[in-house]
Image (cartoon, rainbow, N blue to C red):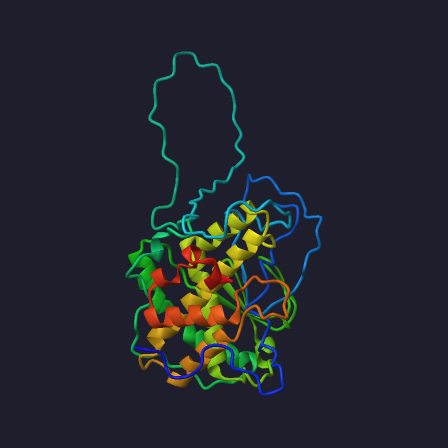
Length: 367
């Protein structure tokens, strides 16, 4: 089914007036990072950058899930010399992370030669495991997509924090039921996302979240800043249930990246590039954000078959296309509004994860 009629990219401003975007972007670059720390156990920290750091908080955010043992750490701001171009068609490393536990050993003198023993196997949990790869990730193959559902009963929208909470919690079971079969078919782990409504400054696993920022994702959880969305006032972005569903779909796209392992692989690649604010680091960040936008379009696709009103879908698509790196913002880490609009439309029209392989896309489509 094709998309509903309407405009998915940023509408033109009225004559003689320059309209600001509804919000700078989906969100800031990884906010849980602290200079001086390595993102994974055993990795040496990089030197802190001596250049200026641009700290710009931009719209609903992803905070990359870090570390296997609760080490929340940093892709640092050091610069590295650019090598080659930014085409990541073949840049798809697979990473293995190990943790070290302290053990106590004692030495005894055996009274007789030790008998040979069969080495014991490690207590590795059975079941599907995430794959830490990018362009050649197995989930980015044909035939993996969100399942169609017959209906998704959503409550009437109340824009208070409690009303947003009810609306989003009613939508999440529908979204989960669409994505869970795709992950299982790909033999990848699955767990429901956790939703946290934020109304005051709070600490969370990836740092500090402020109520005037926008939604962010961190290690299996969406941290939704309800007042920030209700306070958005712009003719291009009026309050409408579709805006909230579209934002939720984007943040859930980061949950898909986290479950599959692509989020952690992207974080490691940024670390190897010298930090998220290097040219390659920013390129990787845009690819990661635009893939979440594409997955968001895939989330909206099954819902358009009568599960929810079509105007909610239309506004969700339009809102996604209105967000991104406008020219007035110096840090280009989320992709232009035009590219956001193109990727959400691509995910929506195809409903195929293989069409959301931003890691293999040409540089122009992820600028």
